[in-house]
Image (cartoon, rainbow, N blue to C red; front, side):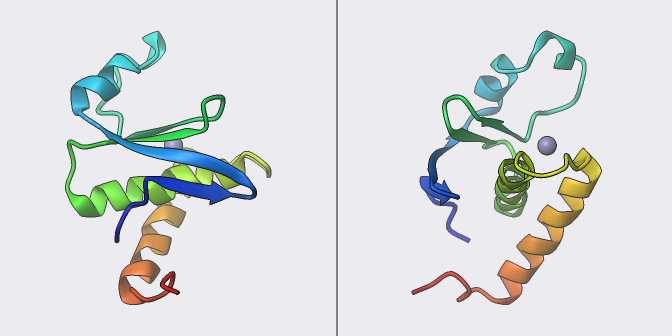
Length: 104
Ligand SMILES: [Zn+2]
């Protein structure tokens, strides 16, 4: 999958940035500093999706889906991180099995 540099979700344009592990770590909140590696973050104020470069392509794609689901979820009932991970994994698998899905 080609992770786009921008994606429009319900009329809002989000920039998609791939950052180094060091850059991602610097974005952790104080209460997250003890947790493991930060795979991705969505900054709703700046309308940016940030994805950690530390992982393989497949993991970055899954993180992209994960953050997209967070954006959609922000307009619905909040899902748990586990539910979002499950949806992201399944959507990514569907996309991989149907690579022409989003091609014009
Ligand atoms: Zn999440």
